[in-house]
Length: 170
Image (cartoon, rainbow, N blue to C red; front, side, top):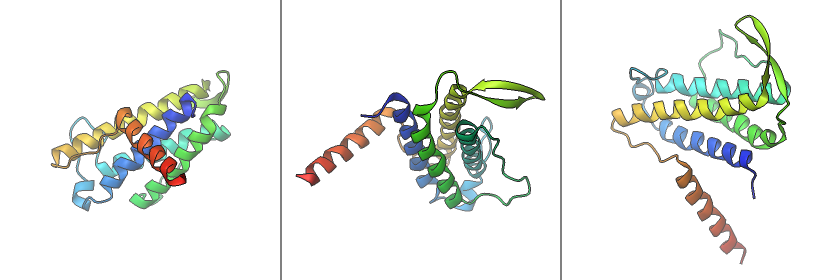
């Protein structure tokens, strides 16, 4: 049995990769689609999600700031997948070790502040969920049915996997 944080971060990784799989089949024109009220294009939003998760994971795991060089070339969809797998698996393993008193110093608008790592964990889940929703809205406007990423669908899929593995072992 997984603990609560492991379940939350496994769902986050599953949802990220499930939606990304749909997006890897899009044309460049579709990837560059956007809507008012969203972060930006589908491509830009994925780059933002992946970069943010790397940054959050770096802070939680090492306390250090992770930042892509501003002159770095745009991240490809396959690089986004690798980044999401790295940070997602990292959070699955690391999040349960975070204690309520653990904090990290972050430059907050020019002021160095102690930020609880639990806030970074919370932000990771909230941030990804919000931006996945924006991507799904853009997909819907393009006439593409996004996948169901809710916890019930995740539960059903995990339950089928466990059932399948159990019957393979017999």
